[in-house]
Image 1 (cartoon, rainbow, N blue to C red):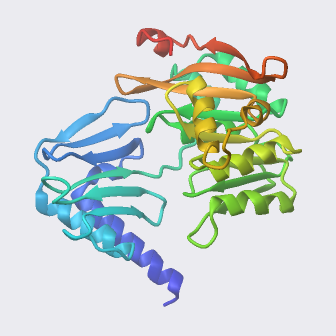
Image 2: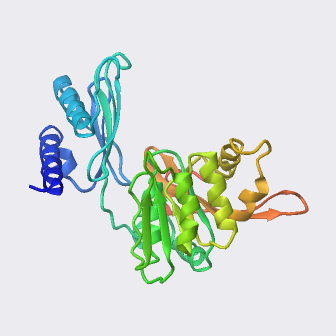
Image 3: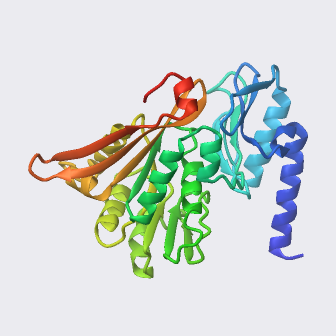
Length: 326
């Protein structure tokens, strides 16, 4: 039996055991399963409401799940090491805790779904307007750098994949750099690289410049060094990029980049942000429902030494029904 066959068999056994405890993971529309310390087990569907599916999930079952995933990832979860962060073979991520940091075992499973959602699907599901979808397509065609911002769990990666799907007929060379393998681009000339313990995301951003990319895509900007390298790359002959960042508004995304850059500079170079980022898409959330809240076109005003911004509020039926204009 080859090493790949052993790995495949181990992965199948892992999922079969997980499905025994959590049959919900077999539903392709469920994106998250999470267990709280009161024993409540919840599921989340893309664009839907969280649903309580079990009020008192078994403690022993929760412990078995955590031990199983820990073993598969070469880790241990004990009272001296009560936290677990692991990635399953298909890209599903688990974050879990046991006592003493919690009263009983808890976890969150973020299921890796091979979604094929398009911008048209977003329009039909009232996540955004047709005007917004066309605006995104135009930004791609004009090779404008796009930053997707939003809180955790709003679907930034899903939207990024929908945008990348628009490049299916493009002959641009697209380089995708990420920590977790989540992004997919159907463009025929695509290179996907993933960071590791030996090669960080910063190094990948530096190295990828040598492989002649037309567009550089980064899964998530989380550090100052990655922000610096990416913005410099976008500013020096590699337009049409895409990245995501955690932020509470479109303007907060720019401030978040400044804050990250302060790790590398005594005075964050705001002009670097203003010249590299041309469009910000902000995904808001109300009552657990994500929606495209605003689109901001960004520029840099040399005389005033500040950002030049044009804000557009998306008026999708969903955004209006939630009574928000974030």
